[in-house]
Image 1 (cartoon, rainbow, N blue to C red):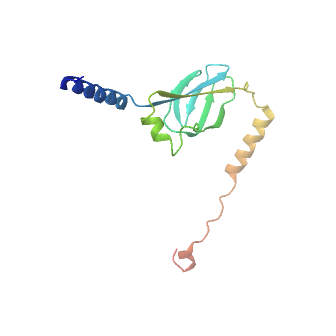
Image 2 (cartoon, rainbow, N blue to C red):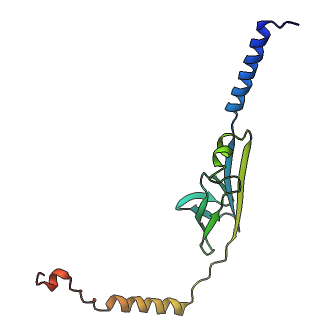
Image 3 (cartoon, rainbow, N blue to C red):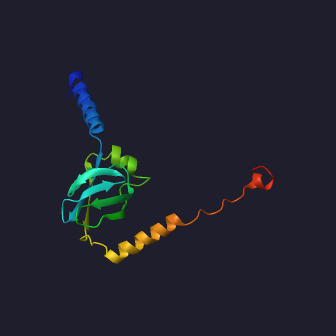
Length: 156
């Protein structure tokens, strides 16, 4: 049985087209964290960037520690350093393949929940003592200026 040249060209074109589709359909990594609070509605600030009231989600690119601050009226402000470690498939040796070669989407979704404590008004005596301490500090005479190297040499 003899094949015609057209069948061979079609097979080659089909093979090239399949390879191009595989190359174009490369891997993808989706990274996202969600912050929740009890009670909900606390304003969230992550690394000095305000991202919104809880519950709130944000996509991220890099792993590492995040400074998360939660602020809500009537509750104590809470600041935590939240570590966000990389998953097993995202390290120095495998990151390139996970991002570019794997033919499906890898998802890394994290959820962090924080409980806020009701704010407590300071006792009147504590405020009074702190005010007196600040007043005494402001009325204290200034500390003498230290003489520098040039003053020691006779240049003032």
